[in-house]
Length: 161
Image (cartoon, rainbow, N blue to C red; front, side, top):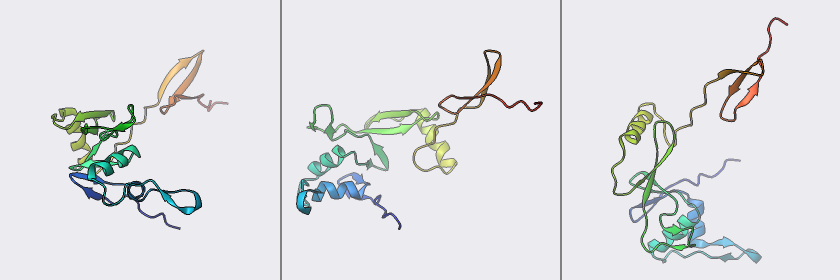
């Protein structure tokens, strides 16, 4: 059975709402006891209220094709809607590190270079973290090879035995 695509965008003001499943929960609520819907702000709610509730659910929001950091409309520390949205964009630099840039600031050269490299290589979305190269080192008189991010140790096989 195929999973239904829930990542079709909805435009709301200047923002793109990506996850329709979460958007449906914002508008219509969720099923409760006896199969009744509860919560939900309804179709007629102000756009800002819809964005606050969607952000609260952790829904992906984009503006101008750029990913907006969660918490732009809902303050998770204070557990309430922000009086004024704090729009920050999420990017990745060349090394794959997350970089947060406020809306009106210029994007650093390192981030622009990383985006150009990913576009040239045809990568869409988040870049994959680079695997660590295998590194040989001596450990207690035995040669140990470390692999991957978890640093899993393996003893090399002796071909002469």
